[in-house]
Amino acid sequence: MGLAFLSDPVVLIGLWVVLAFALAAFPSTDNHWRRAYILMAIGFPILFWITWEHGVFYGLLGLIAGVSILRWPVYFLWQWIKNKVAR
Image (cartoon, rainbow, N blue to C red; front, side):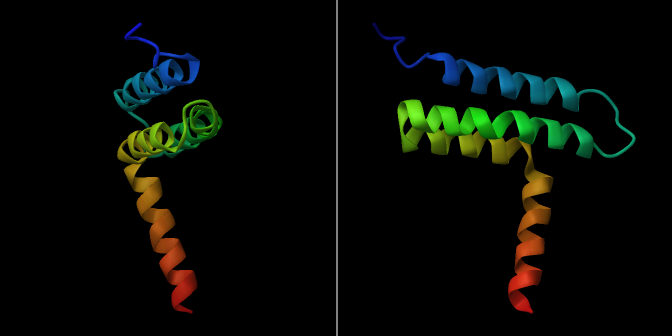
C-alpha cells in the first residue's frame, strides 16, 4: 500500500540517476559532453512520462534531479539564452 508511488517512470528516474553517476565515475576525453547528450536523450522522455503519469509535482522533482546532475549543460544553455536575448 505505501509503495504505490513506485511505478515504472519513478523507477526509471532512479535508474537514470544511477546511470548518470556511473557514467561520471569514468574519465572522458570530451569532458563528459557526449555522455550528457545521451543522458538528456534518455531523460527527456522519462521526464515527460513521469509528468503524464504522476503530475506536475513528480515532474518537477524529476526535472530538479536532472538539472542537479547536468549542471554544466544547463549553465551553458542559460548563457546562450542570455546572449540571444541581450542582442
